[in-house]
Amino acid sequence: MSEVSMETEDSEELPVTPQSGPVVIQGNNKNPASEKLQRVRKWSITKYKCTRQALSEKLGRGSRTVDLDLEPRLDLLKDDRQRYDHMTKLAQTLSNQLAQFAVTQKTLGDAFTELSVKTPTLYVEFSLNAEAQRFLSKSGETLTAAINSFTSDMNTLVNKTIEDTMINAKQYEAARIEYDAYRVDLEELNLGPRDPTTLPKLEGAQKNFQGQREKYQKVRDDLSVKMKLLEENRVKVLHHQLWLFHGAVAAHCLSCHGFLEQNMLQAAKHLNNASVDGPSWLEES
Image 1 (cartoon, rainbow, N blue to C red):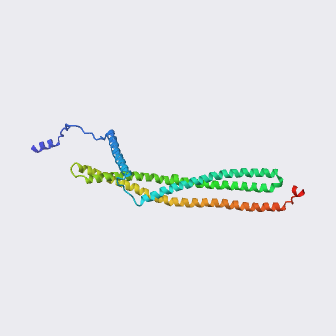
Image 2 (image 1 turned 180 degrees about the vertical axis):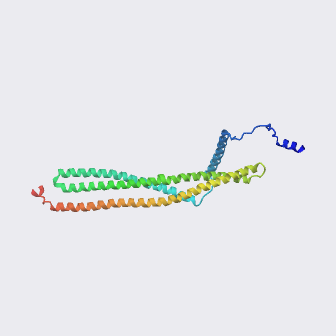
Image 3 (image 1 turned 180 degrees about the horizontal axis):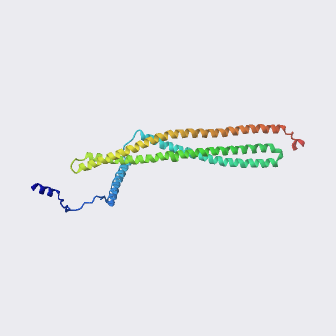
């Protein structure tokens, strides 16, 4: 009897009663306004540190990190960009002047043609000059088009390709200032006393410095790779464009020289074949 009663008690289901107390609901308890305030606060602190660092560098009081490999290359690139820009502007000025010169030559050639018709006794001389000016004008237009193509490609190199790298250089400089700002902050804390109050600040400064160091190194490496690619592209572009420019000028000069030389020979034949002029009024008198 005792065994049966034990089995019965074990097989009965006991009622489950809910436990009393607060109910915990899992979820995202982050406050957007608080997060935004923290971001603004962090940005303000960083901005203050960077402004202080930049100002101290300008006044010659603060130390700055100098990359002895990258920064001389940046200075050379800035100097080259100014020189390329000056060269491009001079080439564009030359193109504009040649275009105006070609228009004047064409107009002068038309005037010579009109006078050759109205002055039969000087037909050969006027025609000679008319043909020369028209040819020089046409050749000048071809040279102008070649120079315009040169300036267009140089503008792309200076104002797009190099400018893109200069934007990265500005980002590098901003990252460098931010890195130095946190570096100086850490160095100042390391010089201070070590106590329970300053140790958490020192640990936070060390963590922030390490993060800024990694960011600075990444920006520096990206800029170094970009500058290497730019150098290779710059040499190829300039090599190609300078040969085209020289070839266009040489072709213009050679074609003009060849035409004028042939034109003079033809004019001499016409003059030799012309009838002998009659005596002048002075000779008759």
